[in-house]
Amino acid sequence: MTAELSALDRPESLGQRAYRALREQIAVGGLAPGERVTERGLALRLGVSHTIVREALSRLEQERLIERVGPRHLRVAAHSEETLREVLYTEAVVRAAAARFAVPKLTGETLDEMTRLVDELERDPAGGDPEHQLGLARRFDELLLTATGNDVLIGLVGTLSVFGWTARKKAVEAMHEKDHDVGLDRIRAHRELLAALRGRDADLVETTLRRQLLIAADYILEHAR
Image (cartoon, rainbow, N blue to C red; front, side, top):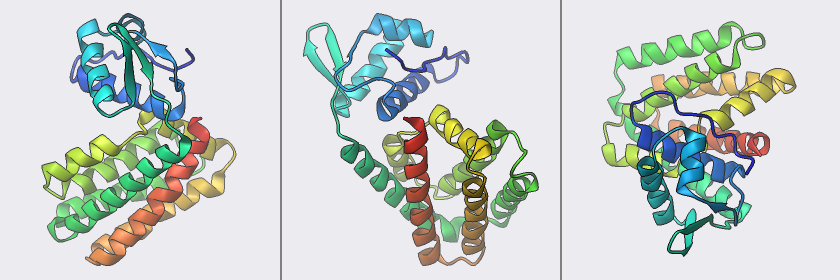
């Protein structure tokens, strides 16, 4: 097993974090289709209890990402890359719809904070720390999603999201190392979306974000694998 599963060193929400870590590794191929997995092996790699891993695997089994082949035997379900891309497309559509619904609910304070985040992203696009820049971008996304005030939509986005911190960090590092123009385009994309949000143009926000998310998903998928 070649998955990059590092120990989860923070005590809060370990079950959720274990689930996310395993889900991401299935998406990027770290846990390969058809690969046998065990609670014990995964618990050791993640540094959590068997109970937490069992709960995470149960959720993944319900999502058809893990399949049971015996009373005590599980394996990673064999989904095609086409299936993964369809899930990513659906995530982009739902996130874009959520952004549309957030437009009339965004406060001036939230827009100002989002502006400060984009300003900081633009400050040193080539030489900045990839992890810090990823944190800024993630905070921008969180503010926009939270502004919907719709727990059902927020939960749906969480269910559809297959790329976590590790995969996204690899993509940002690739932008810094060799694809500087792609990195600059991603920063400009935040500025473009911010302008649409400030203009309270819900149609433009939805179409802009959907387009941006699909471009980003292709790049992340390419470098995560």
